[in-house]
Length: 267
Image 1 (cartoon, one colour):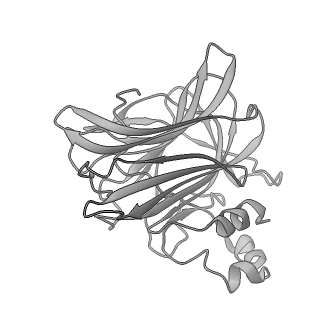
Image 2 (cartoon, rainbow, N blue to C red):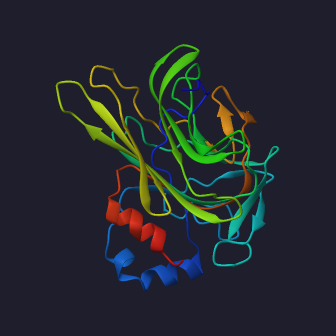
C-alpha cells in the first residue's frame, strides 16, 4: 500500500452535459424518469467549456487542458491533458461528512506510466488525498487503482487500496466508477468500496469494523488530471496523459443498474 498524498474522500465523482446532450438525454426514458440525476453534486460533460451542469454551479478552473474529441467523435466535447502540467481544479463543494458517494468518468489513456485521473484532498491539509488512476508495473500489466484515505494522523495516512488488473486501456475510451457504501455491521461504522471498469465490477474492499473512519468531504474540492499535494492545489504530480470526459460526482452510492446505465448512455 503506497502512502500517496491522496484524496480523502473520492468516491463519487461525475460530470457531463450541454444543450445538445440534454435533448438527447431527455429522449432516454431511463435517464429522464430514472435516478441518474438524484444526488448529483457536480457534473462536467465538457461541452466546449468547463462548467458544472448539475445546476449547482461548481464550475472548474483551467490550467492548460485543451478541448479534444469525445468517444462519439464529437470535437470540443472532451479535454486533453499533456501528462506534464495540465489540470482542471474542482472548487469547494458544499458536501461534508458524506457517508456514501460515487465518482464516474470516462478516460482515454495515452501513456503507460502510473498516473492519476482525479484526486480529492482531505479536509485537513496535513492529511493525505484520495485518488483514482492507473498503475503500471514493469510495463507488463495495466491496473486500475483507487486509494481512499480512511484514517489519518498528521503528515501520514492509512488508505484503502483497490488495485485490479484490466484489459489494456491504452488509446481506448474507458468508463470508470468508484463507489463508497456505508455499513454498520456492529456498533462501529464501516465503509465498503467498489471499483467498476466498462460497466463491470472489478474490485471490492471493506474497512475494518474497529477503525474509526476519516469522514468523506468535498469541501476542499479536487483536481482533474493529476494527483494533488493536499496543502497546495497547484503543486501536483502523477499527471494524466490522455483525454477525460463526463465526470460525475454523487453524494450517494449508485446501484449496479445505474452503473450499467451510465456506461450505456449515448449522449
